[in-house]
Length: 229
Image (cartoon, rainbow, N blue to C red; front, side, top):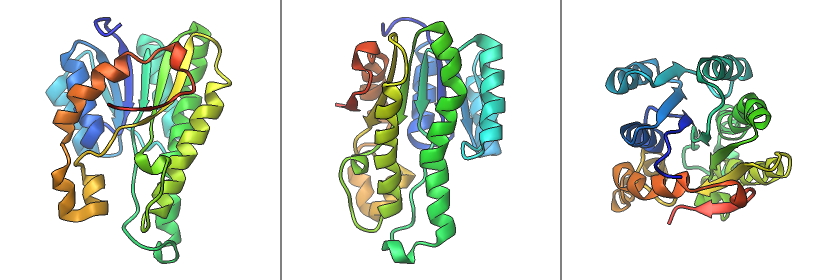
């Protein structure tokens, strides 16, 4: 399965794990359709990787933008073989009662609603074809909790539940899974742990372990809660 050329959709491709995945998978010969909010980041990635990969400025918290993007991707090359819902935000460290309502809403909109919007937009074409894998990036904080990041924990627990429920809705031949990527030194981890985040491996090290694992996910794992080894 690992050697087959695949059409892969990735959200949040301009930084962290998303960028590492896009770069690594493209170099392995897979075709990437990615999105993120940063126009400068999207333009830089498009220049770096070039055709046949496509990168679009999309806010996953906007159902209209997601649906328009998904139509363009599917019309251009068909349904994805692999959809990786990676886009995510974390709140600034604070007890829940000190997190501004607008910040809480934005974390929910991107992490949870965004994941749902992207699945809603791409799954019909995957269901019609009868195959495909959806990987919803969760977190260790989607299966445990920590103080000062309650909004983030809530959304990642939500991603886990959403994934398990949708897994029961898709037909045989598809898989929807929640994936805990592990602890990686990214901007998000640095936001939570400060300088201590540097003790964890970076995205470039992580992606070498993660990609073979992700590409081996198949229909038999539908509904599983997985973790990158």
